[in-house]
Length: 261
Length: 368
Image (tube, rainbow over all chains, first blue to last red; front, top):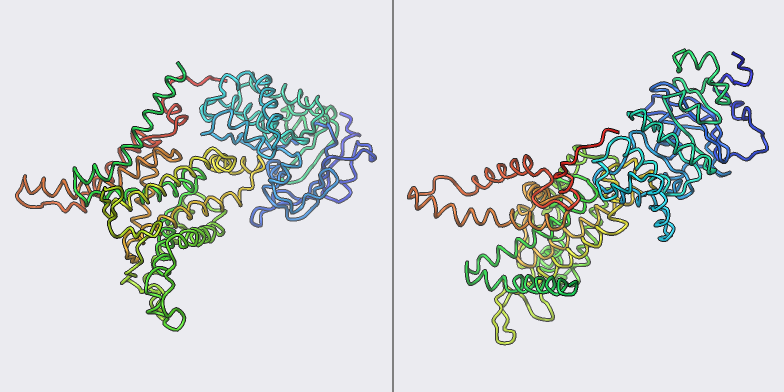
């Protein structure tokens, strides 16, 4: 396969120049040489990536590659060792997680993280925690119920009593309630039945088509690359490959490592 | 139709209110004055349990040293409202401070709240068992300090405790002497009952408002999943500190009431057993549900007294002597009751509505 448009990742600063993108397009998110460690063990070893406004970017890789750590660092839950994270032209380094939410970054955490002993409605309302426009929140709640009729049926039920797929819907709807500009999804397909995965990915595409920027972390590489415009392949803390989704899907390395072909 | 139901509900409320207001007189007539005192103590426990409910029930932070805040409030009044300061520091306070109860209440609320933050700040990253261990240690540290701060300077008077605390006065009327109002004689314990009732009502009101507030929801989100709560834009650090501070304030105020009521405080009132007891009230009654916590407080505050007054005469009648000490029996029954509740009603005797429906839900979970 021709992989001329693909870029072999090296943990160098030059990676931040942005491959395959027009340099004059302002990026919504720009990460440069990000390093993250847990108590001395490096989980992310200097990665760089960009997300343009309205772009759906996939971050794929096997278990333990550092994808979730990257996402948590972007959300402000973990502090990086070094590197730069620019969001909307401003540095996020040292900015608390709750402030990042107010600026339009929303994370759907790994394992969904629904509030089990709150009702579905209360879960969705928590998503709008940083907002104060009561009418807008009520309208968005209705919109979420329209998008996920299942959640409307179960609005007064405790979120912990829902099935995995329904909980994923709650987690997504909850994140959307904050009206984010950048949605970060951590393994939305994990542990779901194929039908439910389809439904969740349809929603992701729908949201993306409305102009929201999305970072999609997935183990299911094929699925993620099918919906994303661009992708990054992560291996043991480094980005080893990046480029257009179509080309990544066709590349030998990705085929071998993640697509079983 | 609707207005009819409304008045019926109102009528029921008036009836309940009347029953509560008459409670000291009914108790006095049926069981004797000693029981009014026991009811007063039960209300102190209810306030404590509601305070701990904020920390454990709402924010999900397991606190095994909660009684320390009760101690802070009690010693706050003991120091500022007794001759102890005059005796210990004659140069500094020749006549003692003798602040009035109404000055001490905000003071001890602030002080206890400060101690709450002091406990919360270093434990922000801890959860569950680890937090329980640290809070347990904190409670013991406070008690041991109270026990030993009689040297080199006599701040707490050590194990002897501080006595001769000024009685609480409301509108110039000392609650320690009986009072005749409108031809009805109100003995001291009755007067304290109404004071405690007012404070309990306030604590219930504040708890209720907190539960329904944005802050309350944020606490519950932290309890359910801290990372997800952070991802919602909740400032988890500040809200956890606030939970500790609010809970501690409730504890401090009830400690002040306790000191004024007893007229005497000593470190032995603030043992680990008391922290465990208050925690049991919260867990047994129904964590996070105000009514449940009140029920737990009433049950666990009254149970030992019922045992003390019931078991000894029963044994005397059966065996002619006391075979088992009611104190020992109390712990045995407590343990049994707790195990039974955890087995058969894991959400507590009176869980909140959603949680009850969760437990009763027999609807099969969908497979997708």
